[in-house]
Amino acid sequence: SQICQRKHWTSGHKYRCNDFKQRKLNSTSIFSQKGRAFGSGDTSSVVIQRTKKVLFPYEEFVKLFNWDKQGFPPCGLLNCGNSCFANVVLQCLSCTRPLVAYLLQKGHREQCRRYDWCFMCELQVHVERAVESSYPFSPINILSRLPNIGGNLGYGKQEDAHEFMRFAIDTMQSVCLDEFGGEKALHPCSLETTLIQHIFGGQLQSQVTCTECNKISNRKENMMDLTVEIQGEASSLEDCLDQFTVKERLDGENLYK
Image 1 (tube, rainbow, N blue to C red):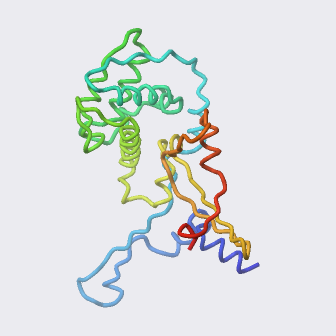
Image 2: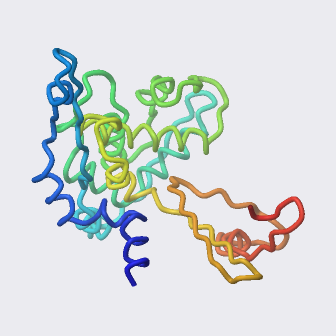
Image 3: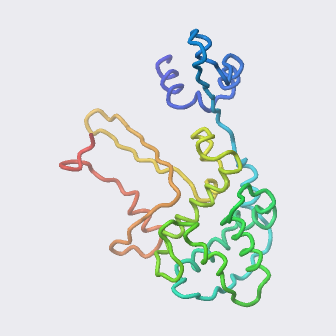
C-alpha cells in the first residue's frame, strides 16, 4: 500500500537509495548562498549536503576475514608493571584475523593521516614484531602512550581490561574516520562502514510485542561490544547469550511506555 511505502521511505530507505541520492545531487546545489537568494546583502550561509559514503567496502572486509595465511602461535608479552590488563587485550587484537590481515597486507602506516602518535601505526609495529619474534617482548611503546588511548588510563597503574579494550577500539575507529575528514564531516550512516565497525560493530535489536493488540515495536542500537552476565549454571558463552536474549514480561515498574 502507499501507506506502507511512505513508512518504508521515511524509516531510512531514502538514505540508502542510490536513485534518490543521485536525483537530490542533481537538483540541489551542494553550496547554496541563502543570503543572496533572499536579498540580504553580504549575509550568507552555506548548506553542505552530506551523502552516505562507504568508507571500507564490505567485500574487502570479507577477503580479510577469509585470509588464508596459516595461523602463527601467539607471542608472549612481558609484564611492565601492572600491565596485565593491556597485555591480554593486545594479544587478543594480535589474533583478530581481519585486523591482522589488514595491518600485515595493506598496512596502515603508509596511509595514516595523523601527524602525532597513532595507535594503529604502533599496533601494526606490534603485530609485525609478534609475528616475527620467537621470544616474549615488551609492548612499552604502547603502554607508555596509554593516556593517548584513554584519557584516564595511566602507565604503571592497575586498570580494567574491558575499559582498555573499549578505548582501543574507539581510538581505532577515530583513526579510520580521520582518513575521511573526521566524524563531523561524514553522514551518520557512513560511520558504520569502517573496517573497525565491520570487525567489532553490530546492531542490538530490542523487540516488544503488545499482549493486547499484538503490535510489534523494534528498536535498534549500534554497539561495539555486548556485556552479558554469568548467572546460575551458565558454563559457556552460548549459555550467557541465551540468558541475555530470553523473553521478558514487562509489567509493574518495568512496564513498557
